[in-house]
Image (cartoon, rainbow, N blue to C red; front, side, top):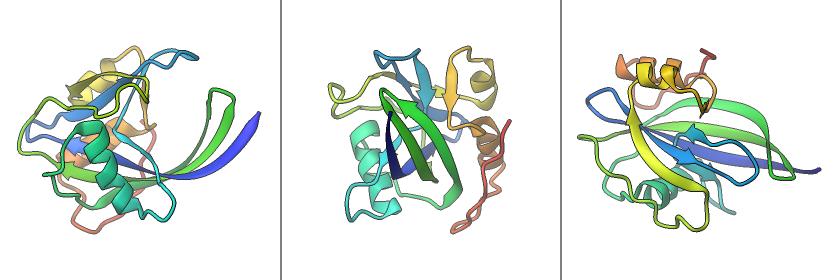
Length: 157
């Protein structure tokens, strides 16, 4: 198995309803799952720059301000025949309301849909939800516990 170390930015896109935007992925090599928008940093990109690029590419929005980094974690997972060791930061993006996300390059990724979920709706999902600890992070963000510029560790549910 090939191994890769990578840096990634994730987005917690939060509506005033307390619901978060999730992407539904259905890769050919594993069961479908739900994940927050985000992805790996391109060469020379900062975490913030990558977060803004992913907001554009996976959500279709350039008009939402990037908020603070509210979590960071190290995770290891397999993707096809790769073992990926990833350090990621999650940024809060506050939306004025729920909207229909537009994935700009759906052919390049196994994204098959987007949906807004509350923390309770995330808890009820049968399919896997990533990142681990997301429900607790949503609960914290809904309570407004992350002031601008803060960095907190995501907890496991």
